[in-house]
Length: 369
Ligand SMILES: Cc1cc2nc3c(=O)[nH]c(=O)nc-3n(C[C@H](O)[C@H](O)[C@H](O)COP(=O)(O)O)c2cc1C
Image 1 (cartoon, helix red, strand yellow):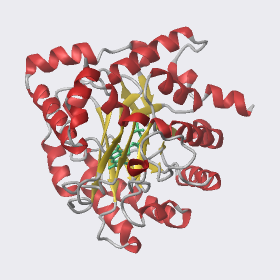
Image 2 (cartoon, helix red, strand yellow; image 1 turned 90 degrees about the vertical axis):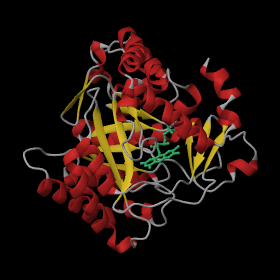
Image 3 (cartoon, rainbow, N blue to C red; image 1 turned 135 degrees about the horizontal axis):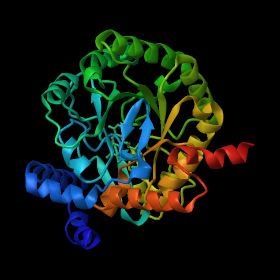
Image 4 (tube, rainbow, N blue to C red; image 1 turned 135 degrees about the vertical axis):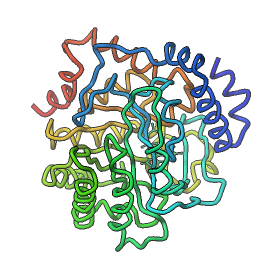
């Protein structure tokens, strides 16, 4: 039904316009009590065996919405209604900014992929903080807040911009993510180098502790799939050293070669980050590498090309306690999150593991034993 609709309507529309149209429907549905209760009953069933404890938080299940879909925190209840068990809003920057000129989002249908160069279009940390403060949640869900650098702020002053966002947003975040991995803000990914990352993460940690009393806000870092393996290891070691709570692997890739892309070169040649199916193998590889390095000392979040329950299960076996998706939601439609949780419950039941927590990292442990 959705796929028919996708072919008929969405596929003919500009991808960004289609996004806003779908977004409006989701937000509207979430405002109508009878409708949202019905939709949530169908799309967000709870499986007892999938209850997940991560980052000191209790969640209904391990699968959530990756950053970038709800940049301004306007559709948390709507996405929760669709069965995502945590919602990561953002990326939010210190100051509001319009992002890159359109056209900046491209569908690679033949590859079940997207290329985007949105460039952190968002309303800025003050507006998003005010919205989160005023929010009266309908569904109980975990809200992660992903922060990034304002484009006009020079790289050398990046920490100040992240600290500003932290001061405004940390109190409203169940967890906070330092995004240093989007390819569409010039210089941003240089912040992944440990010499830059150490002071940045320390400053954000300090700002979160200073501004939020009585609760330690979990802090994660989100990394790119394009890091060399030694750099992945270096970030893992740094995360352990700094007592970070988690690592999200991965953001989109700037790579195009060797991914077996079938779409036309005019599309694959668009500048920006590639997400979806072609990212699957590298994201999984980075995740397994991280788990081999940090084990259970840090919570790992697997994202990148998760299309179905089997992909999510593979991330869990590789070491992810939480799993996220974005691009496949565009292709699969409203039943995406439901199908993943349902399939995960079936896989867990058929597996030798008594709990989901037991399954986390099982394959990587075997491979490295
Ligand atoms: C249109 C679009 C916008 C995105 N914006 C952000 C963002 O603002 N911050 C961020 O950390 N990741 C962003 N991402 C990356 C996703 O969160 C995710 O890491 C990536 O797309 C890989 O997952 P997927 O293959 O399931 O899409 C964006 C992805 C897409 C497709």
